[in-house]
Image: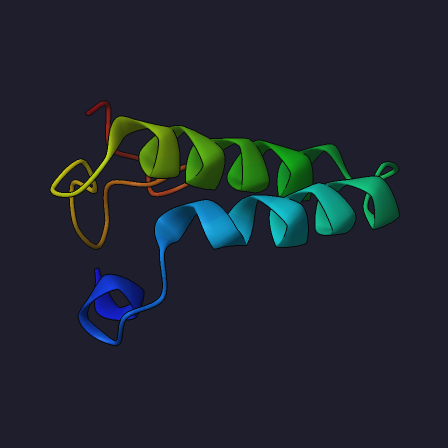
Length: 61
């Protein structure tokens, strides 16, 4: 993860994701993407499947 490489701990992103989710409460698609980001952060390093496998990509991964 790019932020980890730069010394930014992943857990520091949770408050930002919470704030975004609160502001985007009327946008379910955006909230699903934020939820996906939370799951990746909770899973730890190496959990991101890479580009093209996230929500809305059409992949079943």
